[in-house]
Length: 199
Image 1 (cartoon, rainbow, N blue to C red):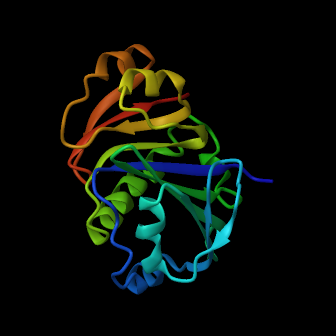
Image 2: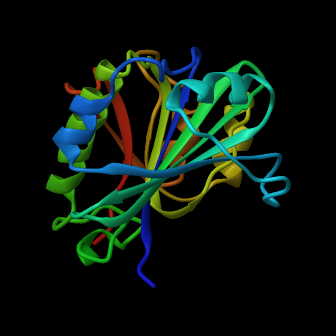
């Protein structure tokens, strides 16, 4: 089984799933293959959700939403949505079966241009969904648990190649720089990205 690219986003406001997302589906050539609500990460009490417009209500009730996607480019993909405190966390995963050069948890010369493309696509999707992301974390086979304590969150995360904290400079910059990340401005995201560069 191939590794997965994980993209984690944290937003202050919910995503409006009542709007028509057909243009987004057409642009990325994917289709929804099912939506499930679960009580927790042990997958207790799964229940199918018939409509995208029901997702907001399910999230507000404290349940986790799992969206299964089909896409010819990545074959398998999906989205996990969860409300943690007052924040909305969505995690997108994409199979890297056809992109083995991205299976390294660090950026490298072969993957750097692809990551620049990823930043551009993140900016496009965020604008389309009107999602003001205040935190982005990208990596391969990641472990990521959102916490209001950013220092604790960064220390407990694994395999994150890129962090970005929106328009504000992060109070955790020094920690990331000490861990070997490099900071640079990204015009698409209109924010600094902290990248872990490999050989």
